[in-house]
Length: 82
Length: 420
Image 1 (tube, one colour):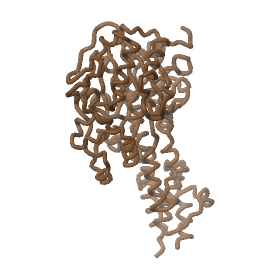
Image 2: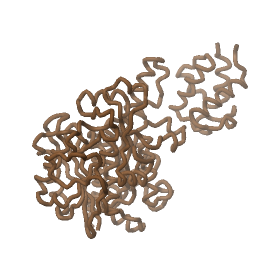
Image 3: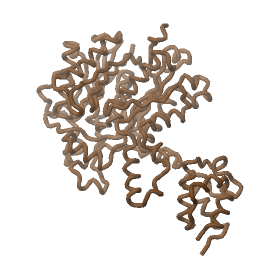
Image 4: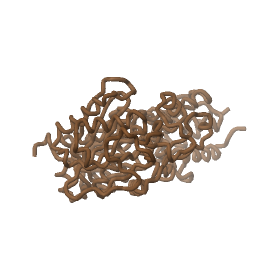
């Protein structure tokens, strides 16, 4: 069963917490991964791989650069999850 | 003063070793003659011919924030911990620039290891084979590259005068400190954070070293396994950790009123050009390094009262080093208290030169030489005054000490320090 947007944001928050140590409550839709959440381009790859696994979705490398905010990623996953 | 021949001093020290999580606890254990060697508890160790090592006393995970630690190879974690201690010990309150006492453009780092991020490399290869390419960490390359410890210290401290990583196996840490001395002496930098680090406690390096017949197989007596100069020595015991010093031009240190441990006089360097992994049997290469030191510094043999020897507890190496020392320094060897601290720390490979420089600096500073443990039956071929059992007081007045490091590949490095 597909995850809701709320579930996706919660999942992303747990992933970002694991990788960058940011408190889960700080991971909000409008937050930029690089500017707000201390996720650099290398750590972003880790976030993507963890999200792919968690939400059963494929996020091609070419699409990763468009995922600037948590909201971008949540929308992408919502649209593409199996 | 001539900018190509500036006086260099040591103003800060830091360490994390098998004996303690900082330089003070390491030094205390060295003076007490405590061994850091223990049986390996890991599952993979059960089938290895060597099942002992000197593992770190305080795990980096207890010290470093997790998001930072997970992006650093274990060797870089050790180096960062030791560098932070050394930086604070030198009296700096923040990174260069934020602390106005040091200009970022005049601060460098030189931190070396023998093998680089070997546990990262092998761990990620396991992931590649077991879980596929997508799971290989994007941090793998910046973690495993040998210059990663130096680079991470440079980033942490805002050091912009250069970040370097000389690699010469077990001489790496000493070569790094020698390189740093030259950076300051020649005017490229005013302050350099330098040392060695190593994290190679993993079945592959252990199997490889064991198959070279280089390691002690004294699994039944871990604390007695590293026994330089004893007739029963049968190879080195692998250790891990890091030792870092802050080197500074004497002028810069005086200007900011820094506490000075001692002068870093310089170094002697040579290459054996003999065999990739065996010492040159006559000791010619090592002797050349001692001679090179005397030729290129104002060190007087009469000043040398202490030697922190390379002495890894191998049958040939330990006595070869002393033979070379005697061949160059003659009767002056008689007033040198020789310590083999690897009897307690194990052999930290590229980390050894860093940790042993910290020990040498503290020996001069406190005027006491640490003991060599496990010398139950002194090898009759040892023609030097080995400090055994108890620490030994060093004389008053101007005294100097040497720290020797020799690496596979044939590089010989002798560092010299002096306290007035």
